Image 1: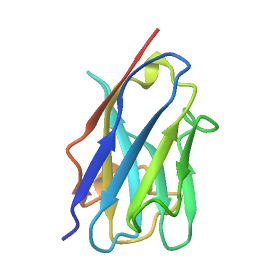
Image 2: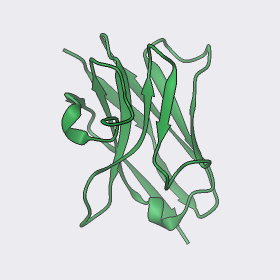
Image 3: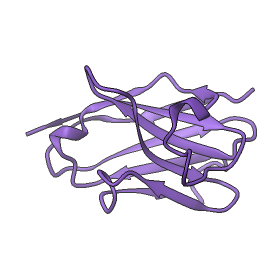
Length: 126
């Protein structure tokens, strides 16, 4: 069993930055971030494959969002730094984990993840 806990998020003006952290207990091959805006489908934002140190980003956030790994983070914690935020980034953000590694074909598929956090709100005002 893997438990997933998110932290971070909040409110910021357009152009600002926020960080989201996710801690997955136990063994996880792939940790993904998803978001869901009101009335929209949950979509994959980014994923990190722990074993291969491979990162995936949705086109809508590429060059703005980046994973940060640092010595200050516990081993199973990843931080997603979100820069140049836009109002369209406003959503509930969810961290998810699965036991097998990320891959280009499925990292953004919500059905491929077994374990989910409760979500954290990100609000970007114009």
